[in-house]
Image 1 (spheres, rainbow, N blue to C red):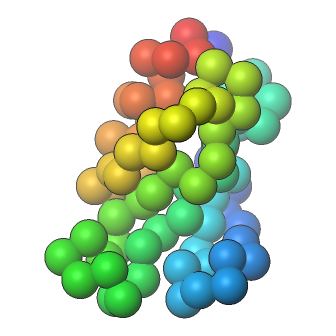
Image 2: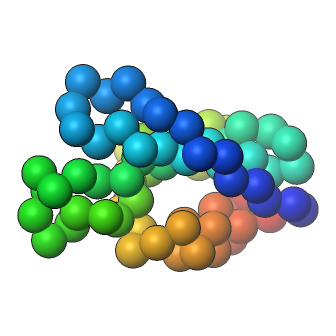
Length: 78
């Protein structure tokens, strides 16, 4: 399985607009949003805004960086 990331601006109605689309074998599987300074100590981390397919569900984890997000995605869609 090949994972890919594409930077994108996400309309969130909040300062958290820096985003990333996550693809697994050219299929969109997740939208991540980088948390703004408004989130205090969590600022700069990546939040699972929305997951699709196997990543869809009530759990929306926060990742320290995109490498950690990539590992999490790979474990679930692989």
